[in-house]
Image 1 (cartoon, chains in turn green, orange):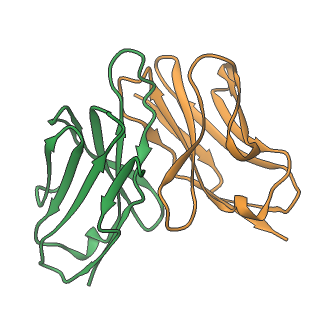
Image 2 (image 1 turned 45 degrees about the vertical axis):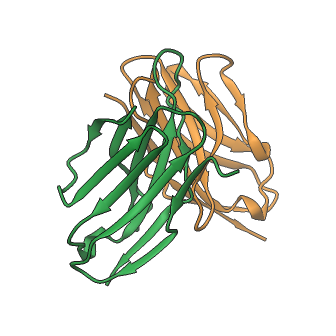
Length: 115
Length: 113
């Protein structure tokens, strides 16, 4: 069983289109994240949700809208895609609260290519 | 605020040679430290973590790292490199687990025959 799963693994789309990436975790964690990895492999946090509540929003354009229907799911919708949005997007999850070390469990990534 | 510096964006070693990947951190409180590995076209996988127990931490695939508070370092080592170790390695820091992990910029390990 995959602990953190993302779909789709690859997206190729035209500029201006809208796309969504879905993420699900079966680890029982209460915190989920979206990270963006650029072409230089740099990992940058975009969003974090704890029990469906947004707790981190790191200066991401408002074309990016995360949605968490429940604590096991965190989806990412991107409107009006731009060339600079091309990247690998990683979903991750963790526990929270006392005793939490901050360890993240990552999905396999979703490679978005905007043409 | 916390930060991580990984020295060297690329490290090249020969198969069988010692692997040393450097990581220095900055944290205002005792940190938790992590090394993750990313193989091509895959997600990040935890190699090992330091969470204030033993300062020498052993991980998967023969890797280990030593937490040195006086040097604010958490360097990753492996006595003998294998071709299969070729990957991107990320050091990360969390201050007490209430904050999000901060990642270094990564070090690509290249292993030649």
